[in-house]
Image (cartoon, rainbow, N blue to C red; front, top):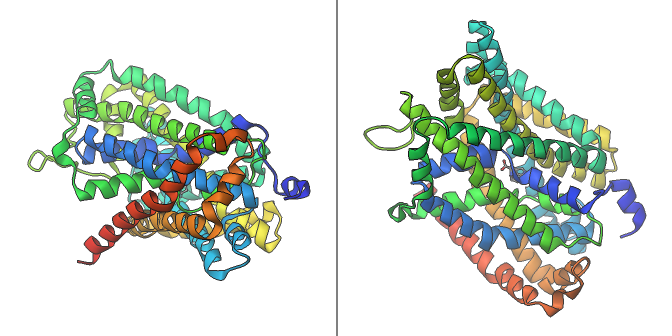
Length: 455
Ligand code: TRP
């Protein structure tokens, strides 16, 4: 691809900037809200082990695949599959499916992200004694309030995207990610000074293998796709802004480790916090069934109570900080979700970035407002576009790469930035994963999910 293309589409400024942006995409609500909830829901440490395996066996090879396709074609997912297949319409459909999944996942992601803002504000408002307003801000079912914060979060996302790749996305993640890590560590240190946290830690690190069921395998794989931002071309898009001197294999390794690491660390905060809340009288597990009371809304239902029990200025500060942390993590992820359809509109319809960001962002915001008033749509969208949509997209990406584009061509592309790749055993091992292990595993999981759903 010519330099003029790189110039007009934009590119990452530094190698580290790209890794941070991709890690920012991966680290989000999925890590800080989704992962700990799943761990608590699925019997603790056994889930963590299975999740790690999913990330390593399926996630990591697929991430390398997405980066490689992106960098080779320097295009959005639709353009990328068109280019590699000489304009085959079926191949382009893989890209279209990704764009659609991106739009729909973003539409509920914005609603949950909006909650992080309204709860952060609630901490302050209730400290100041405006109890009625505080109750409204904490009311998950208030459609008007949800819509306002959803749109606000959408606007933040759009504004960053209009700034472009290096000046918008790269610069924003470079500022936000270190703050996020700092806040996370401070909160963990604090939570461990509270009564009950030790019990939470014990549950978190002691595996109970009797909880490993087919259902748990499905949850773990779905969580891996969502958390690593895989299966819909977000990382194809991020890869398309890469320069040829970056080692994509090494970058994918950093991003995977960062994502898994931050999920684990977030669990060190949220799980002990749940037990601290329980020790202070807030019910989390149903005493009869032992199951979690609420899962989608867990952190929003349980943690404000905990912050309230801490009380006073300290409680407000800890609560506010926690929800801002969640919001920052969500923002660097919502950027990547919006960038996929935006880059499609820029590349394929020749529309300028600013205009594209406002048009696509506007459409997503309208859908998100509808979700704000109908929260039951979240479960529906999660099932169709996340639990089915992402693994399906991942499966098609693997099959396309392995059997149409061919792994040899992909390895040739990886050679840029990894000159001695052919002297290592990496190409052989990766090829086996992309050709056989990943598609077979994803297929089994998808098939079982659909089978269980239908019968
Ligand atoms: N990975 C993000 C999280 O953990 C969510 C996300 C961002 C995502 N971009 C994505 C999920 C692309 C799937 C595909 O919260």
